[in-house]
Length: 186
Ligand code: ADP
Image (cartoon, rainbow, N blue to C red; front, side, top):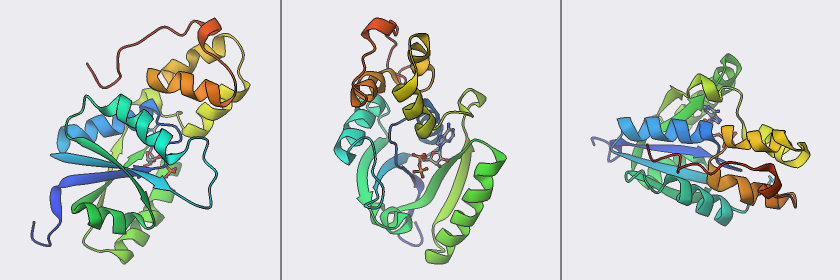
C-alpha cells in the first residue's frame, strides 16, 4: 500500500442499466482474484437511463449479495477520482470483443494521464456473454414477443427480468420464464 492505495482492492464501474450476466461474470471473476471489489454505479447527468441509480443499486444488491467481498456504491464524476476515494489501486474492466479493446485502450490512457497511480486490469467474460449488452437487453425487453421474452434469462439475472419488463409495461407471467437460483450462488 505504498501510495496509500490498496492493490488488493479493485473498482468495477459502469452504468449497469441494467446489470447483465456479462457484468456478473466479470464481478465474480474479479471477486475471486481481489480481496475486495467495489462496484461503482455511474450517475451521468447527460444520460437518461431506464433505471434510476437507486433502482440499479437495489437490483445489483439483490443479485450480488452472496458475494461477500463485493460492495456497491453510486458515484458521480471522474472514475479515477471515485477509485481514489475508495482507496483502491485497480480499475477492473470487462472486454467482449476486439472493438471493445480499441475503446478501452483510449480510455485507459486517459485515466492513466489523470491518475498514473491507478492501473486498469481487463478480464474477459465467458464467450456465452460476448454479445450481451445492456442496450441489447433493453431492445429485447421493449420489442420482443412471446418466446423471445423467455430468452431474457440467458442475458440478465433472474431478479432483473420482472423490473425490466415492467418498465415497458410488460410482464413475464405469460411467457413462462423459469425461476432460477441467484446467479451468484453456485
Ligand atoms: P458503460 O456505461 O461504461 O458502457 P456498462 O455498464 O455497459 O458500462 O459496462 C461496464 C463494464 O462492463 C465495461 O468494462 C464493459 O466493457 C463491461 N461489460 C459489459 N458487458 C459485458 C459482457 N457481456 N462481457 C464482458 N464485459 C462486459
